[in-house]
Length: 184
Image (cartoon, rainbow, N blue to C red; front, side, top):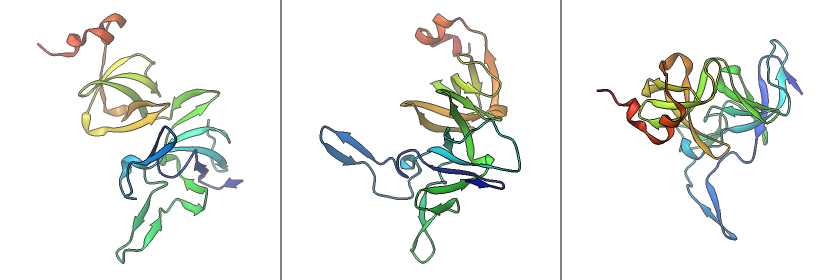
């Protein structure tokens, strides 16, 4: 399956991540379709664009924009699918709606994005980046952070050009002693 300019994807699990298993019962966390926190952002690539080269392969897991799988209500109150929707389990996304991909069990950020583990307001530890190394401690503009759950870990997606500083720190300081990030 191929497309001229779009990646073709399907949800990794479901469109929404709004349930939690507790014992043998399923708890519904949210019933609203518009709340972005409960929309799945993980997908599997089933088709590649033919008009440009990409490091992403069919079968790779990708992190996508929260509106890809979202349903919404129009002005008449009718429930609609996003513009990415093709059919039940098939969606189209352009490269601007993709942030990271997992190939050979390794996550990689796409150009322009960095994923950080938050440490303090505007400071985080790089997990995946297009230019920074895993473990680097960086400061970033807090207006450009978006929360994602990747492999059960809360990470912020930050545009790489919103990173304002790379701290030079000792590994033992960053985990247990956060005083190094406070200004005097």
